[in-house]
Image (cartoon, rainbow, N blue to C red):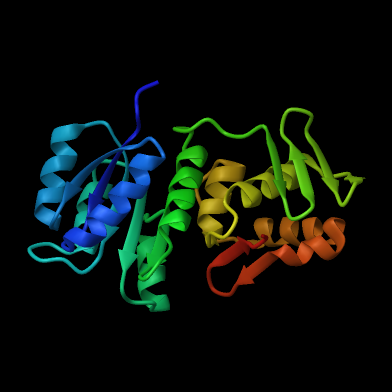
Length: 225
């Protein structure tokens, strides 16, 4: 199987090298750009980029401008990097179709884990058939869930929702993204479908339901060691 190609865009060469080294250890092909203009040139030239890691603050053209232009032509997954940790920036990122938003400084290992989670959910990376996190075992083949040794009865959508949360543990998921990936339709402003299913799922999970955290104004995050 050919290596998936990732475009890393950052005006700091040390940051690009750090990210590149960790991605290459995980068997990805990495190409680099030092500013937004170069990033767009490479994106249009390469054609087969699987994911973009994009810094916001850059010379010539910032990350927001790059993302806006790319979104006119492609739904390639985008992870935004920024030194800021402003909620308004994060919300703007999701509105622009950013898949993930990571504030500097960050753990390169966590970045790679998030890259893999995004590539799994966009069907570019083979997904795991059995997920085990925090005492929860989800068997996607058998369509079964075991929590602390006890079989749990979930509806089809509750099962899909839990599997999606576990595949993307530690990642803030907007309601739009959850609907698009679990229900497979575009978001039109009614979050009650998700909120109702999350409430029922938490109830069936007992104490483990607390692992599904609410992110006010955005959506949910599954947090477990």
